[in-house]
Image 1 (spheres, one colour):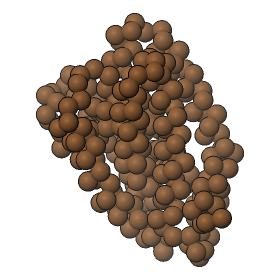
Image 2 (spheres, rainbow, N blue to C red; image 1 turned 180 degrees about the vertical axis):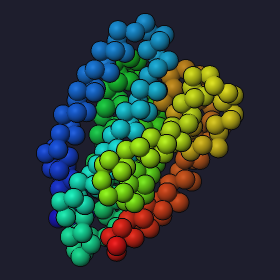
Image 3 (cartoon, rainbow, N blue to C red; image 1 turned 90 degrees about the vertical axis):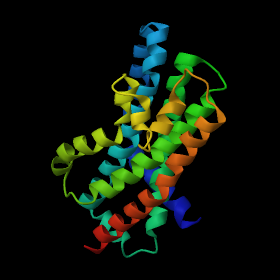
Length: 228
């Protein structure tokens, strides 16, 4: 078994043991009940917001919790002297938490939309947001030693990461948020409006441009934390 596959398997066990999947199942059921209770137009309107908020929790906060847990248990320091490379460590987190976010988001979309072609765009949007949130979480959390130190600053960080949600609620022109890397994924999660070739190219291509520096920043932060 490769190092990456073994790390993914270990991460799944850790996430299961710490109740991540149970918490996600509870959120899925609660969110579906809420969305089904709302009028159809309202449910379709808030669906992208609910999906993006859940992706943020499943990636940014879950990966931050995992790193803090590994540091507290000593496994983070132990991994620094193993053959496991930083990009394999990050890839395992991206795969496991991204898959969790994808399953949850698609279940919510199915509950509101049913089986539709636009689910593919929603899936792509979830995947892109998951990668960016997860990488940002790794880069951000390594500077903190405990959950209490991390929580308050994380509110400001996640506020900046989810800035395009303001546009979704009509605060400002949509063009204001085009430079933000999460505007594209959020537009893919939207259920109204035609996705032209140009809009799709922006919604997918522009966030991908941010993945490279975000990954480099995360690896740099991770390597510094392991060396400390």
